[in-house]
Length: 184
Image (tube, rainbow, N blue to C red; front, side):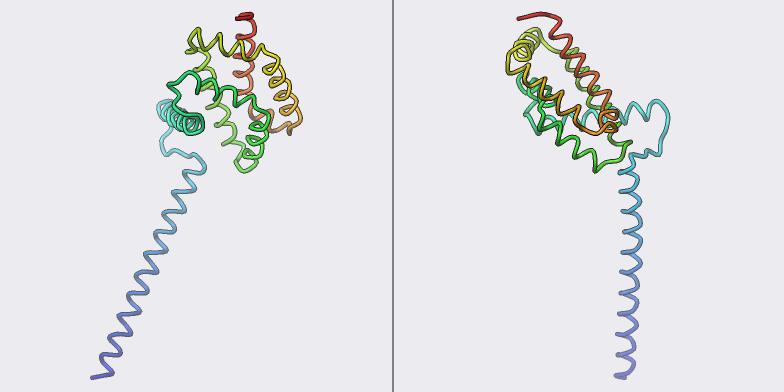
């Protein structure tokens, strides 16, 4: 009788351990695949609609990130701070260091998302925002900031500079348009 109970307990324990082992293995495979898919940015759907949805998700995520850094983007001063942060030499260095931890494809997508945000901001700037930003960039401190940002950017690796070309092009277009408009 004791032997039957011992055998029962032993085999029940083996089955429970086997069950949890298989369950654990299945979950780890599922989660690993899910993270690989998310990390690679792979969508199971393709086509223009899927690409548009992916861009919209990236833009929403980027706007959320900016809002977490600078406050609500509904406030013009916060949008201005966000734009000027791309010209901060310390942040340029941080963006460069962070890019080393991402794939070239992810860096390209991030640069394109940043470029879309800058272009949208430039298109939706109010006249007051334009005047304030123009005054800031045309001041001595603004010119120094632009020179420092340019020096920092030029000192970085060529592959990084090439990867962020879309964002830099939009940023330079914005600065050039503001400077072209003349003094406030």
